[in-house]
Image 1 (cartoon, rainbow, N blue to C red):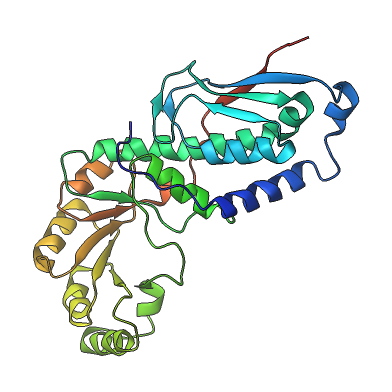
Image 2: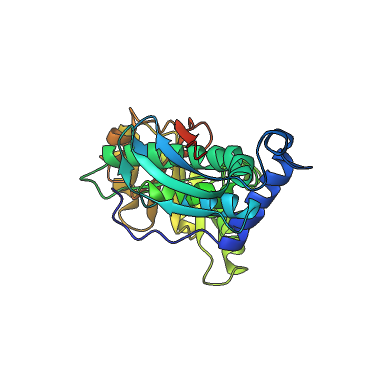
Length: 290
């Protein structure tokens, strides 16, 4: 289980996402439930794990089911960040049957995806245990779901990178291609840094060892080491010598992350946590209360 404190996602943002998803899924109501189920019917449903994993989704479950009826109650059996086994009951939902059925797919879609992210993140974190490296996410998130997916990374024991382009300077290869090399690059970075408030973090990407000194001379707070093999990462950590944080990125997979962490880098950013994760298999089963 993830033991670090996990801040909740912004409730207003969660509500906006869920509201938009429900409007997409039931723009004029749920025709099937309206035709088949009495408006007076009340029932219960259990959210059950069909495979083991790490849970994330308490906020989206509550928001989705309560959006279709204020009478609906969600009783969580696990907390965000908690590991569970196949067959575990994760939550029990009670209330008007039509409302539960209408919210079912949106609630499941979101909880399955977020739990998938939390589960994969926990696996990456486990591979780096015993090192000082932090596993972090990237901006390779599903458009519109970033705030939820970042929360899921935290539930899996990972950490968050910058939220958006507005949060920090991160000069990547396409920026540097327009700035020159060597001293010319250092001067360009220093000019940029001089324009920024002192609170803004300044990160610069390199893809070769011989770029590191120019980037440090330009005032980088973090050096992003892109697509370095472990031997190069170890050498880069040695060259930087604590003058900046080190971040490894590129070719970060579950079968490579342990070797990357062992090089001594401070951060390991992995797009795989969010961009291609498989949704966890969770099911919602209604109980017959006739």
